[in-house]
Image: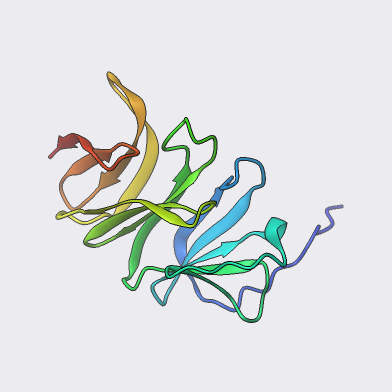
Length: 158
């Protein structure tokens, strides 16, 4: 019989198929999900009672272990994973119909913010061909683009 370790009342409407689990501090798994109001919900029970202050992320007033990342656009894709192996922890990647945000949850800072003219309908992290560094591969309406951890466009095809 399975017993829950904890329960979580979301209080936010989560968009379907837009959930990711990442180790944003390199150790603890955290839940990230796109809300229907242009925000990304980040549940991190490992940092309870720590004060977070920044312009992009704010603490939910009702839940001490939930942060909201303001995107201010409809989120079209979301994933988490290692984009820069030297950091030792996962990055959160958020795509909209016009932009891609690579976000460092642990340091509460943008890694890069790029315009994606074809839109971002799907996103995956990994290596491709002869390119040794991990890429954020973005699928738009008819093109694929691959960005490294600095935001450089290393791959493009239609």
